[in-house]
Structure formats: C-alpha cells, structure tokens
Length: 208
Image (cartoon, rainbow, N blue to C red; front, side, top):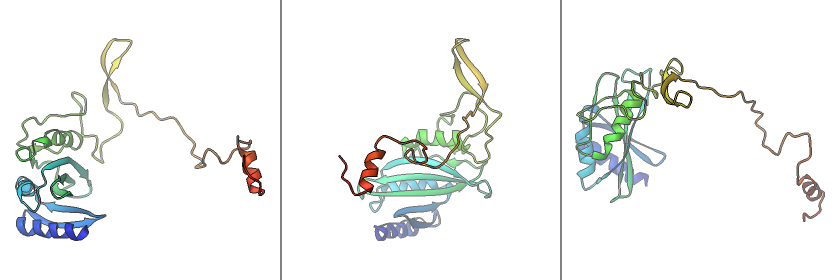
C-alpha cells in the first residue's frame, strides 16, 4: 500500500510543482503539502487526472499552530472511489490571508469551509456565503483557536422562566471528581457478589 501511495505522491508533485511542494507518508496515509494560493488548481487536478480521480470531498478543517508565522494548516481530505485511495492535502495560511474557496471544484465543500471559518477564523475567498455556521448570532472569536479564552463569553439559551431566548455568561461547570484509577472491581473494603466463587477457583475448586 505504501508503495502505491509513494508512487501517487511523486506523480502529483512532478505534475503540480511548485503548487505542490512535497509529500509524506505516515501510518499508511499520504499527505500532500500545497501552496494555499494554488489550492483550486491542485484540487481540480486531483479530481480530474486519471491517475487520481479523487471525486469525493470528505472534509475541510484546520489545525492551529499559534507559535508559527503562518499559524494555520488548512486540511482537505479526499477519497478516490475509483482507486480506493484516500489523500490529505495541507496548505498553510495566517490570520489575515484568505484561502481560495474550492466550491467551483467541489460544491460539497460549502459548509466545510463555513465551519472552518466559524471555528478558526480562516476566510475563503470566493465563497458565496461566508457566514458563521455553528456558533450563536453575534458570537465573538473563534472557539477552536488555541488562544481562545474559556471565560468572558456569552451563550444563547432558552429561559424557561422568562419564556424567551436570552444571552447569558458561558459557564463551564464541572463537578469535582476524585480519580483513583481503580476498576470498579478493585479497592473495595467489602465483598462483592461472586467473590466467593473466585475464592473457590483460586483454591483449585470448580465454579458452578
């Protein structure tokens, strides 16, 4: 399998350089590194070239690396039903530079790109409806950024007493829990049902 992926990686890099800058194989998965400005042409090649035929867009998401100058990896996952191969494409961008939308190649990327914009703040140039998708109306910030604060924000909820939708401070309440890392069958100071059978087996007897 890795030989097939290695051959595919070399094929794509040779055909699309410098738009695709390299590839890597890890855990039997192929990842291409692409220039964000060329992502539309890269996606079109992966969809149409007979050696690829990645017709299905599985996901578009991102990874945040706050200490890096271009802090975001925009990540695309594709599937080729024809060749039974999956592929991952990564493109780096920063907080200001929009990434070209791939909707003209994969219309199904519409909501994926909106989700990525909502949660990471990455804009997609040419998207016909670049609005938030998952967070509340008027939400401030992007929740999946690593520097997103966990307090100081409001949420929308329905208030049963007021009989209307209200804004209220976000509460991240969690009860205190003491973890002893023991299974439910260990650490008790009283006998558990079935202990008498275990005792008989341990003494060479037969359980019922």
